[in-house]
Length: 228
Image (cartoon, rainbow, N blue to C red; front, top):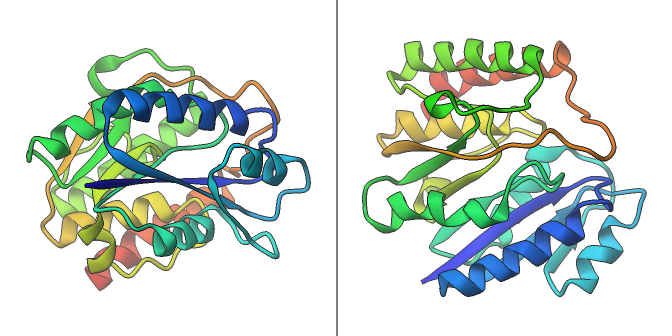
Protein backbone atom coordinates (compact mmCIF):
# COMPACT_ATOMS: atom_id res chain seq x y z
CA UNK A 1 0.00 0.00 0.00
CA UNK A 2 1.33 3.43 -0.99
CA UNK A 3 0.49 6.72 0.74
CA UNK A 4 0.76 9.91 -1.32
CA UNK A 5 1.08 13.13 0.70
CA UNK A 6 0.22 16.19 -1.39
CA UNK A 7 1.53 19.57 -0.19
CA UNK A 8 0.55 22.76 -2.04
CA UNK A 9 2.90 25.69 -1.42
CA UNK A 10 2.97 29.39 -2.23
CA UNK A 11 5.72 31.51 -0.69
CA UNK A 12 6.30 29.33 2.39
CA UNK A 13 10.10 29.14 2.45
CA UNK A 14 10.11 29.76 6.22
CA UNK A 15 8.17 26.57 6.96
CA UNK A 16 8.12 24.09 4.06
CA UNK A 17 11.54 22.57 4.81
CA UNK A 18 10.55 21.83 8.40
CA UNK A 19 7.20 20.37 7.33
CA UNK A 20 8.82 17.99 4.85
CA UNK A 21 11.54 16.91 7.30
CA UNK A 22 8.98 16.10 9.97
CA UNK A 23 6.73 14.29 7.50
CA UNK A 24 9.62 12.04 6.49
CA UNK A 25 10.40 11.23 10.12
CA UNK A 26 6.73 10.48 10.80
CA UNK A 27 6.39 8.23 7.75
CA UNK A 28 9.45 6.23 8.77
CA UNK A 29 7.79 5.52 12.11
CA UNK A 30 4.49 4.55 10.47
CA UNK A 31 6.20 2.10 8.15
CA UNK A 32 4.01 2.62 5.07
CA UNK A 33 5.48 3.12 1.63
CA UNK A 34 5.02 6.78 0.78
CA UNK A 35 5.69 9.59 -1.65
CA UNK A 36 5.76 13.32 -0.91
CA UNK A 37 4.35 15.45 -3.71
CA UNK A 38 4.96 19.19 -3.48
CA UNK A 39 3.15 21.48 -5.91
CA UNK A 40 4.69 24.94 -5.99
CA UNK A 41 2.12 27.54 -7.01
CA UNK A 42 4.68 29.84 -8.68
CA UNK A 43 6.31 31.01 -5.44
CA UNK A 44 8.44 34.15 -5.55
CA UNK A 45 10.65 33.05 -2.64
CA UNK A 46 12.87 29.98 -2.05
CA UNK A 47 10.01 27.51 -1.51
CA UNK A 48 10.70 25.66 -4.75
CA UNK A 49 14.45 25.39 -4.13
CA UNK A 50 13.99 24.19 -0.55
CA UNK A 51 11.44 21.56 -1.58
CA UNK A 52 13.74 20.18 -4.25
CA UNK A 53 16.60 19.99 -1.77
CA UNK A 54 14.38 17.85 0.46
CA UNK A 55 14.16 15.16 -2.24
CA UNK A 56 10.39 15.45 -2.59
CA UNK A 57 8.63 15.05 -5.92
CA UNK A 58 8.18 18.67 -6.90
CA UNK A 59 5.90 20.09 -9.59
CA UNK A 60 6.25 23.78 -10.38
CA UNK A 61 3.35 25.75 -11.86
CA UNK A 62 4.24 28.40 -14.43
CA UNK A 63 1.82 30.93 -12.96
CA UNK A 64 -0.02 31.43 -9.68
CA UNK A 65 -3.26 29.45 -9.93
CA UNK A 66 -4.51 28.99 -6.36
CA UNK A 67 -4.54 26.30 -3.68
CA UNK A 68 -7.31 24.26 -5.26
CA UNK A 69 -5.59 24.10 -8.62
CA UNK A 70 -2.29 23.12 -6.98
CA UNK A 71 -4.01 20.33 -5.04
CA UNK A 72 -5.72 19.03 -8.17
CA UNK A 73 -2.35 18.86 -9.94
CA UNK A 74 -0.95 16.94 -6.98
CA UNK A 75 -3.89 14.53 -7.02
CA UNK A 76 -3.31 13.81 -10.71
CA UNK A 77 0.35 13.02 -10.01
CA UNK A 78 -0.33 10.87 -6.93
CA UNK A 79 0.10 7.12 -7.31
CA UNK A 80 -1.01 5.99 -3.84
CA UNK A 81 -4.11 4.07 -2.79
CA UNK A 82 -4.31 6.54 0.10
CA UNK A 83 -4.01 10.30 -0.40
CA UNK A 84 -3.20 12.81 2.34
CA UNK A 85 -3.11 16.61 2.24
CA UNK A 86 -1.41 18.95 4.69
CA UNK A 87 -0.88 22.71 4.67
CA UNK A 88 2.65 24.01 4.16
CA UNK A 89 2.55 26.94 6.59
CA UNK A 90 3.38 24.86 9.66
CA UNK A 91 -0.10 25.12 11.21
CA UNK A 92 -0.54 21.31 11.12
CA UNK A 93 1.62 18.84 13.00
CA UNK A 94 3.04 16.14 10.68
CA UNK A 95 3.43 13.93 13.78
CA UNK A 96 -0.37 13.70 14.00
CA UNK A 97 -0.76 12.09 10.57
CA UNK A 98 -1.18 8.62 12.19
CA UNK A 99 -4.30 9.94 13.96
CA UNK A 100 -5.90 10.64 10.58
CA UNK A 101 -4.70 7.42 9.01
CA UNK A 102 -5.99 5.15 11.78
CA UNK A 103 -9.76 5.25 11.00
CA UNK A 104 -9.09 4.68 7.33
CA UNK A 105 -6.65 1.81 7.83
CA UNK A 106 -9.08 0.19 10.28
CA UNK A 107 -11.88 0.35 7.72
CA UNK A 108 -13.95 2.83 9.74
CA UNK A 109 -13.94 5.65 7.18
CA UNK A 110 -13.13 6.55 3.59
CA UNK A 111 -12.43 10.24 4.21
CA UNK A 112 -10.87 11.59 7.40
CA UNK A 113 -10.66 15.27 8.36
CA UNK A 114 -8.35 16.65 11.03
CA UNK A 115 -10.55 19.03 13.03
CA UNK A 116 -9.33 22.09 14.93
CA UNK A 117 -12.62 22.28 16.81
CA UNK A 118 -13.58 18.70 17.66
CA UNK A 119 -14.25 18.04 21.35
CA UNK A 120 -13.79 21.74 22.12
CA UNK A 121 -10.06 21.38 21.54
CA UNK A 122 -8.34 24.72 22.08
CA UNK A 123 -7.19 26.41 18.89
CA UNK A 124 -5.53 29.64 17.89
CA UNK A 125 -7.60 30.04 14.71
CA UNK A 126 -8.86 33.56 14.11
CA UNK A 127 -12.34 34.34 15.44
CA UNK A 128 -13.70 35.56 12.10
CA UNK A 129 -12.49 32.42 10.37
CA UNK A 130 -14.07 30.25 13.08
CA UNK A 131 -17.44 31.96 12.58
CA UNK A 132 -17.23 31.34 8.85
CA UNK A 133 -16.37 27.70 9.37
CA UNK A 134 -19.45 27.21 11.58
CA UNK A 135 -21.62 28.73 8.85
CA UNK A 136 -20.15 26.44 6.20
CA UNK A 137 -20.49 23.42 8.52
CA UNK A 138 -24.18 24.16 9.05
CA UNK A 139 -24.89 24.54 5.33
CA UNK A 140 -23.09 21.30 4.52
CA UNK A 141 -25.05 19.46 7.21
CA UNK A 142 -28.36 20.78 5.88
CA UNK A 143 -27.54 19.76 2.32
CA UNK A 144 -25.72 16.45 2.85
CA UNK A 145 -26.78 15.37 6.36
CA UNK A 146 -23.09 15.06 7.16
CA UNK A 147 -22.14 16.70 10.44
CA UNK A 148 -18.60 18.03 10.72
CA UNK A 149 -16.91 20.60 12.95
CA UNK A 150 -14.15 21.73 10.58
CA UNK A 151 -15.20 21.59 6.94
CA UNK A 152 -12.36 23.92 5.92
CA UNK A 153 -9.47 21.94 7.38
CA UNK A 154 -6.67 21.26 4.91
CA UNK A 155 -5.39 18.27 6.91
CA UNK A 156 -7.06 15.20 5.38
CA UNK A 157 -6.63 11.56 4.47
CA UNK A 158 -8.75 9.71 1.93
CA UNK A 159 -9.00 6.61 -0.24
CA UNK A 160 -7.91 7.42 -3.78
CA UNK A 161 -11.23 6.18 -5.16
CA UNK A 162 -12.85 9.32 -3.77
CA UNK A 163 -10.81 11.46 -6.14
CA UNK A 164 -11.55 9.11 -9.02
CA UNK A 165 -15.27 9.39 -8.32
CA UNK A 166 -15.34 13.18 -7.90
CA UNK A 167 -14.70 15.76 -10.59
CA UNK A 168 -13.02 18.53 -8.65
CA UNK A 169 -12.99 21.93 -10.35
CA UNK A 170 -12.04 24.45 -7.64
CA UNK A 171 -8.97 26.62 -8.03
CA UNK A 172 -8.97 28.40 -4.66
CA UNK A 173 -9.63 27.77 -0.98
CA UNK A 174 -13.09 26.43 -1.79
CA UNK A 175 -11.47 23.11 -2.74
CA UNK A 176 -11.99 21.76 0.80
CA UNK A 177 -15.74 22.37 0.70
CA UNK A 178 -16.18 21.00 -2.79
CA UNK A 179 -14.27 17.84 -1.92
CA UNK A 180 -16.26 17.25 1.28
CA UNK A 181 -19.69 17.84 -0.28
CA UNK A 182 -19.02 15.62 -3.29
CA UNK A 183 -17.59 12.91 -1.05
CA UNK A 184 -20.69 12.98 1.18
CA UNK A 185 -23.08 13.06 -1.79
CA UNK A 186 -21.52 9.91 -3.19
CA UNK A 187 -22.04 8.04 0.06
CA UNK A 188 -18.46 7.73 1.25
CA UNK A 189 -17.95 7.53 5.01
CA UNK A 190 -16.70 10.78 6.52
CA UNK A 191 -15.04 10.94 9.93
CA UNK A 192 -13.21 13.62 11.92
CA UNK A 193 -10.38 13.33 14.42
CA UNK A 194 -9.13 16.09 16.73
CA UNK A 195 -5.83 17.72 15.80
CA UNK A 196 -3.60 20.48 17.11
CA UNK A 197 -3.48 23.77 15.23
CA UNK A 198 -1.09 26.69 15.39
CA UNK A 199 -1.84 29.93 13.58
CA UNK A 200 0.99 30.68 11.14
CA UNK A 201 3.94 32.51 12.69
CA UNK A 202 5.61 33.49 9.41
CA UNK A 203 4.14 35.53 6.58
CA UNK A 204 0.43 36.14 6.33
CA UNK A 205 -2.64 34.24 5.26
CA UNK A 206 -3.83 34.99 1.75
CA UNK A 207 -7.40 33.98 2.51
CA UNK A 208 -9.83 36.90 2.16
CA UNK A 209 -12.74 36.26 4.58
CA UNK A 210 -15.26 38.08 2.38
CA UNK A 211 -14.20 37.16 -1.16
CA UNK A 212 -13.09 33.62 -0.43
CA UNK A 213 -15.98 33.13 1.99
CA UNK A 214 -18.45 33.92 -0.79
CA UNK A 215 -16.66 31.53 -3.14
CA UNK A 216 -16.81 28.79 -0.52
CA UNK A 217 -20.56 29.27 -0.09
CA UNK A 218 -21.08 29.07 -3.85
CA UNK A 219 -18.90 25.96 -4.10
CA UNK A 220 -20.91 24.16 -1.42
CA UNK A 221 -24.16 24.77 -3.25
CA UNK A 222 -22.70 23.98 -6.67
CA UNK A 223 -21.09 20.75 -5.46
CA UNK A 224 -24.39 19.65 -3.91
CA UNK A 225 -26.39 20.42 -7.06
CA UNK A 226 -23.92 18.47 -9.22
CA UNK A 227 -23.78 15.69 -6.66
CA UNK A 228 -20.13 14.97 -7.43
